[in-house]
Length: 542
Ligand code: VG1
Ligand code: CO
Image (tube, rainbow, N blue to C red; front, side, top):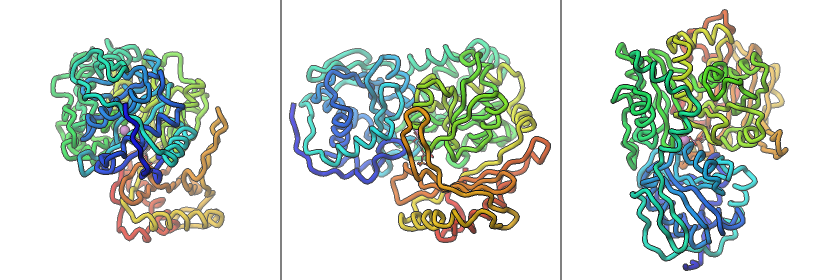
């Protein structure tokens, strides 16, 4: 074992982010950088002595090398055991499940999620606690503090471990167990859902396309959808994880999953389409000719969850991130369960799930999940949809129409202004923040502001507070615009503008989203001075 002196803390500007530390891959590859961060994590959690960690990642460039470094640092810090997915692979939800199932003390997940991969793209590392969920802010703050005062890291002098073979071995006295990354996760899914019913659906000719986007869900989707549920071979496309995700962004939205989208919008569309992101925690749901907004998907899942075996007793409550549309709140009201509104980021759902206050949670960014793990779970959402489709025996578009007629429709879109110069993005935010108090009563085009505020959150379980979580402008008639800065970007600042407007169940339910949202888009453009971005239009609309 060696203790290496170190002085730089080059990552302190980003911790705590929405989802661990994300940087350019080359930044992570600098000598000492990853080592410092891993040591800071162990220092922040009171040391690694005698502990058991789960380690795995989404297979992106530098995944395998980073795992070798983490193993040696864990061993030198006295960890008793590390469990790794074969080949260094574990989807984020599978890692969350393994931590819980094995009773591990925590996990290190290597991923920059939906960000592109490669030596000139992005890398990331996130620490999850013993409930399987992302470290809460109290811990990410400690990691940040220990990073700032770090003077040394410990690393074992050992040869690289063989991650290709399932089985156990030893690294400098620490037990290393390599497990199949899919087995335990697949078994959990079979417990939650009616696999016989879904098998019968596929046997009856139901067709599906799942785009794994060259990322980690390929092996999971192949095994579960094709091998266990009998979906036609070839249902899963882009199924082999590649270090640069085939050169694309593994982000399941209509822009980046364009291969799937063009098939689903064509006359050869299968009955159901889905995609997942780099680390497998997000999902996109699309029917023939119809994209389902993630906020609507969460609402439909909440309204129909009782059709799947795991949720027959009903759901305790639902939580959504603040920028997510109010569609699920309408379902909660009808079900008579509590709706919670949290800041962006899955870590805010952990306490609510642990306390049994909510069963389902979701975010507008295509994350949906339940109390079965403590992360969002892309394939879980796809399987719940399949279970619902199998039980209801109706098409996806029919289910959506029925949902909107019952609850009304929350038209929804997110406009991203990517990689803006930081001062520009911050100026947009501060100017709007300064105006919030004056806005109520003012009219912009057809819309009049009814209220405006900055979102703060008090965790109902531990009373911890999170401030400055997004600027909200509400309009008479139920429309809303939200502005916040992304915490996951690696270049400049990304400004996210979230738009929604409500149409009751007897109104115009099938408008083009951009048409339905045009008034609120124009209003917030004027209110927030979006011309200041220097962009004629957002870079990405999802
Ligand atoms: C984005 C999404 C947020 C999500 C986060 C991590 O954060 O908006 O909803 O929780 O990514 O998702 P931001 O700060 O860039 O808006 V993932 O799939 O990286 O775990
Ligand atoms: Co992700």
